[in-house]
Image 1 (cartoon, rainbow, N blue to C red):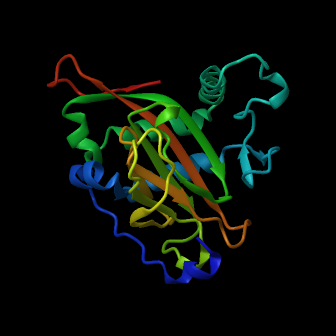
Image 2: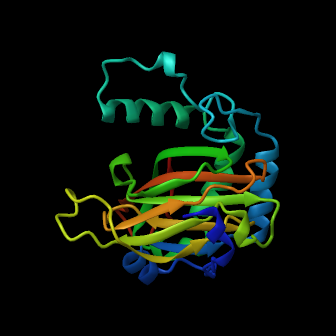
Length: 244
């Protein structure tokens, strides 16, 4: 999407609790985080040691979260490389945030999912900035769902700033696994403003998303990304738990 078009964007309105209709039929449920929990996240983020991204994809990343290129064996397959990077990031993920993440997953906002599932964290990542990315599906990275939670200095995000997540449906006419992404039906834009987070359906390859780049790379736009596996509970009457 051209930067000149950002100002014409209309942002989606977040819900209070998980919306299964939006999740299954539009690819994601957009929510507004509880204010007290958001403040808890912000406090934890302020305690994280941030460094410049050596790959220059993002503005900043937490120290040690990314495995240096020189330490990745050359003979690994794509899936082996993915698993190695995910394991390293999860092992080095800031401890300050883990308690808040568990509160987010086990909250009134996800009660519908908790009726059946425990939440296993397949991968976790964190960065500041937005380089923009084209339409894509993250299903090959593992996880039944993605959570993207945003942290910024803006209570209300101005469309012209860019950095929005757009969700949509691939209208490709051929086999879904063979066709390239062509025409897309857009379901709307998620603003990366304070308290915004979205639970993305990561199992259906028809549902795709893309991200606009920031007009100014110095704008604070922190993104917490979680890959989740929904693990059916042995006893549905028991409280749900988070598995790291």
